Image (cartoon, rainbow, N blue to C red; front, top):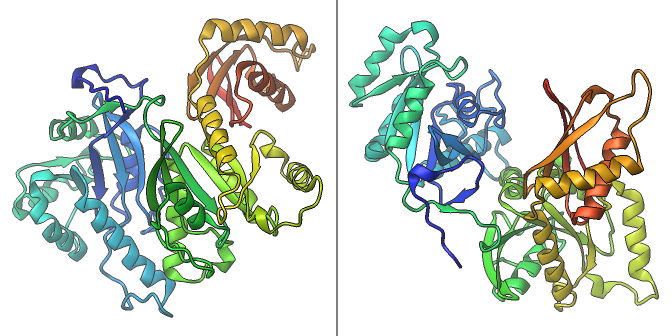
Length: 474
């Protein structure tokens, strides 16, 4: 695999990179970790709420901080005041989850290149002190930020943090942005960017997430593709608890597989560890290029399958509807066509997603599945130059002009493709509020048909001179 090293001074926010240094935001609940995460990311991804413990699992995203790319990770709060001892067999859900959150936070911190310990202005709590003790062995990769000091609020007493042995402390306001630029500069100064490489979609492994309800054959498929027993296979639903990773090569292309815990309806998720595993399975969508959504061929498409597909669709991931256990279906003429028609009828939103029958147990359909994955991925990383795109746009408008009327009139000016994987276009118009969803659907269908995006989600944002007004993914 070709490696493209990058000089730190040449980083470009318009490009994608890999092997990024990991910066972890850590601290007790409700100190402002998620607010700082969103501030550094310059967009809202982590949920912020005054209720302590809103963030449970780690939330991560690539961010540009002070001109450098980093992997930014927001963790769940380090929490000591759990009323009951953790239990995974009959104990309370809240306490067991608290313990899992702390365990995940500790694990994430241990793997970080740099930890930003966030404290709240004022006196430290017992949880703060316990976390400081835990982090002492990692002091060489630790930065301390005292949050909620906007306008100098409680800043004088907050300098007492230095008594815990820290050489420097940054007084910030994540909500208002006070002194955050100084913190950003300190972060990048402490990081090593020598391993960062261009994330060339044409050479790196294709990342596949296996998702679906429990017992649809995800682990069997993972083992079949990787020619291993890396995933435990059992007829009991829910055997896979965590994300199991593996690799294989097909047609000279490397694939990276993420085998996940089965996702079942929330009302059915009663076991504490499973609740946490489901969250991690959903998060594997963030790490994937393509989702193989495994559907039990005998059971057919379910509402839960639709919800899983919607999650992947909203992230702009490639999706292949994988009808597993096809070897158990009656050998009836046109059986696949009938099942495919039924899926298309009940799941019109996913009309672009290919459907393939397979048997992970006997290996049938594997070649067709992987050939489809290569086709889907080639469309995900496809870029259309602005010139040819706008020539096509002129043709589409000529064939189907915008409506004429005092309230419905708008003029389409030009279009640009702003990203691949996920695929996104921005179309600039004179009056964004006048553009109807049917016309957006028309443009999306022409992009798919004429420009080569027939198998992937296409995100379209309608924008005028005043900024974004309407956004539709389909």
